[in-house]
Image 1 (cartoon, rainbow, N blue to C red):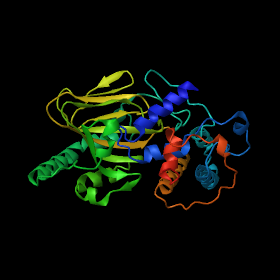
Image 2: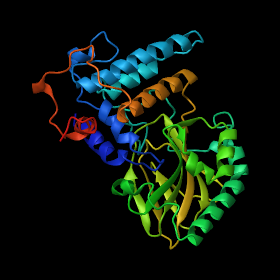
Image 3: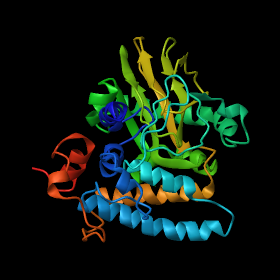
Image 4: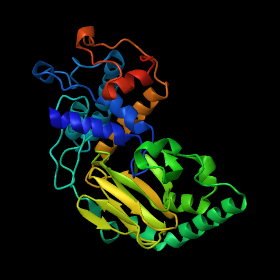
Length: 355
């Protein structure tokens, strides 16, 4: 449908890097998962994952996902957990189900969506110890992070270097040239070298047992007079907290139809599947610590399923999984998407199928 086409195109442009510190994993996973909507016949197949519209490499990926989820489901069902929402997630990620309907104004969910999760543009994490038991303690210890961050900034200025010199310049087409990041964790892996520059921050984050999600943890800078244009990353199963570190008066963030301002030492928590944007109209840099974590409505079984899917996607992207012929027959050549068109074309190029 037209709405799906618009959403996919928007997601392709925004996916490379979103406000929540995402990284190249974003567009690559969508390139695996986003395909043309399956026909009615394909949707009614008895297999968990419909196969008619997938390339051989995509078929291999989703067959491996299906096999892995069988073991995860077997383990957790003995504890009374269901994986039904993750199975639905997989079907929608392949285009076998329509995009979810927005929950409210400004909500722009994508094909990477878990049904039934509470949808709110902003969350008051520090006041909700049940869902966010780590948030109040993080705020209480914000001074430790701020002091360490300011010392590092001073050191890099003395050394005539920049903490944000080259980590995320590639993201400027989406985030704007004024946004950059220094990563502590990416794709579930802590950056040992970068964490060594912030040992107190690293220790605090580890001790708090925050349920960190696949996207990462980073320090983010927004330069004077810059802003991030409105966009959505579409994933409703990851929430994002910003801890204000150095925030000039007048800086703002908007999610959905609500605009807020950061405060130093305080958290702002949002759902980046809502359209969001930022602005720094001042003459000084704005700095925050960005933390991505699993939505509290997910069960431990669902987290395990999503972790498996995204870890496997990363292995596919990194070339750690050799190609094998899929068990299912791929689509005929005359049914293929035009090469280089949309996300399917990007996946083809990333895996060596393009020019």
